[in-house]
Image (tube, rainbow, N blue to C red; front, side):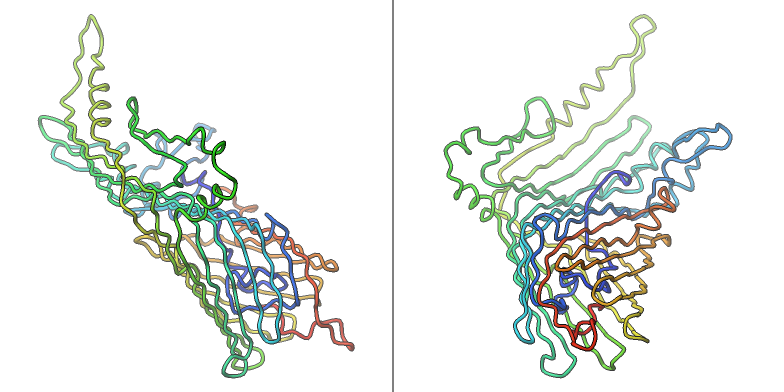
Length: 465
């Protein structure tokens, strides 16, 4: 799960990345140096990330010198204690996906207006340490292993946003920005309750669970309990697309489940070479109206296996356990509920001893369902006129110290290309040790750079925050 769960999020390096119009996504107060930019659909930006709180690939699979082949941590020669030492009581894998359908912005005096239409997906998977303690340590009489905390929180939605920023608001050198967002929910699933335990006694092994899931989908999709499986049936009305107009289809997709959000950012330059910045992203929620509630109130006592020397092992207990689990599952029409976005707080400072070379420090805090994830980033930034911008970064995240990244932005006439990652260098050098990988790629058309007649450098303040 830690190796394969894929998603996306904003790379920290972008907070200090010059020459990228979409840098206002991480701080709404940032104004691009151009008068107008148009993002290429689907590529402004396209973003992908995977992030694991506790495990890297080498923690699960690694080379065994005695056998000369790769083994897993669960192999008899594997180091199970080292594997478990990496785990917290409840661990998580974060994943998000984003691609812009439309992105544009333009200047208006000291103000800058931006508009974005973005398809986003956010996934958080939670798994407890007890899930691995059971197969490694087993159970002794009277002992209990808890799987509580296992769950998922996944959302897919469309974000329509309008941003505004203003230079020198109220006092000189204070820039303020805000982005209002209308959210159109496509689907959501989240674990509202998660209690699972396995315990032993002298008579039996006892399995119990009290799980509850909230599920939300557009009205065109129905979810019902399956007669042959504990997994529910998901169906789309066969006649929906034939009998429904295109306008109504779009309306159902965008207006069945709606919500609102806001991003806020500030930049303040107390002295010419120092910039202080802060931003809060994704303060918001989505209200889900077409909902279902899935529950699993399960209890089963395993009293042993009957073995007959003539007929073999009696496997009827497997079917009994499956029947008990299936009968404990209920899929019912649910009540409307709301899910919040994963709010992010950025606090940064950048210092430029000379005009085109600077250094930055950034603190990032992600507020998850019941956890807080903290990251720290240091960057070195360089701008070669308006054509080339480069950023090198180091980030401490997910309890991992090997996170070296880079960002490159190129302006070839009106064409702007950029690629940014917090982990691209470390991912290439230590691929099996990396716990997080992200990548942003973007392409824009930029117009209206104001150029001083005496120098090719733009008059705007450097695009480095």
